[in-house]
Image (cartoon, rainbow, N blue to C red; front, side, top):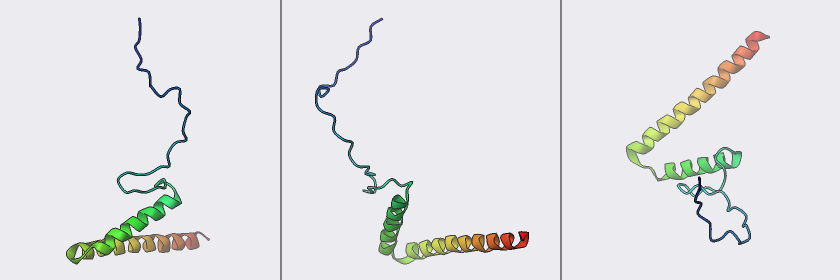
Length: 86
């Protein structure tokens, strides 16, 4: 059984280092699973948020405040449960 493989015409060239990671959709240069990537995500969100007006801006503000309120409740109830176990 014979297998045909296509040869790359650039096999003889020296290997170049891989290019830096760039997310084509957002132009981010950091891995989104790292702290630097999260900072870039927050920057992209705040840039988009600053462009909003009217009802979309209000809806986005409500969602952000609900997320922050939920985070605050989680911290408060976590501290309460830790204090109760002592």
